[in-house]
Image (cartoon, rainbow, N blue to C red; front, side):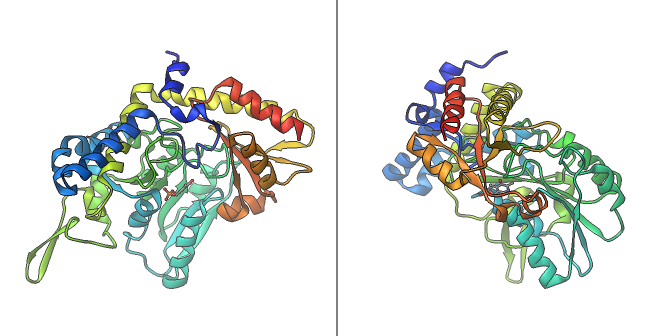
Length: 390
Ligand SMILES: *Cc1c(COP(=O)(O)O)cnc(C)c1O
């Protein structure tokens, strides 16, 4: 099955105004997502927020089903939150950290996650152990297994890092986690919507993701998956009257499902929108979407690498939709600004967002052009042409 790109672009009004290659930052919402959000906001204006929520309950509850279906989970394993970081933090701080506990992570780890490791190292004396990368630049699964020991409390990696095309072998890491019965937290922030995700196949216990990136949902949305059998091994670091109930004067009872990681107030409109985005993605076809965006990115890498003075820096045996490059004579920030003047949206990857990896490879700030399935060949050519001219 091939995608109807013309139709998909028609349903993506933003494609008429600019060449959007910042999908790893925040992709363009399709019209049905926008409509669902606005429709709910309108209802809030007309009849009141609580009343609107009550009326839109089926649409709101559909988000749990849609997200669960998208990653092959059960709806009871999904918590809807405001972003991926919050989801990740609820899982990470939900483990009962003790002095000497070791965290195994990968070189491409995301800054916010490492900052939390460092904070836990400072406050609790946990140990951060960065597993080296293999010859493809992905986490070395053999080295990972060699590092396993009784003090390893968590394996925690980014599936697709923020700074390039690398796709870490999440499933192979999951096999190691399972073999030694070690909790496994997967940061799938960049991968949900970019590559098909099956939590059963990957074997992660916890997975965090955001709505606005490759999933094409509205900003301010995210979700946490916690495997049913793992739920009671995690203590939500914060509770409120939604995640728990105050049952007697001196006691409370937590919710039974993953919603114990939520808090009461949230954007109902945006979360409905994220559910519509998940349904839209499944209707487009998750595998087809992935093939298309990976192939656009592969073509871009090939064309860019042929331009004198341009170097492409994506790692991995299998590469995703993000293309990172540097220009010998031009600063990445300048390139981004110049492209923006031509209505081409890209982003930059700085050392501080993935320091282990960027320092190891001694990379400067890179230009990051992230492709989605709705991008087309003309847009790709325009990017390459503009870079050629620089
Ligand atoms: C963007 C990103 C995050 C953070 O997501 P938010 O929704 O902004 O909290 C986490 N991990 C990775 C790998 C990311 O790229």
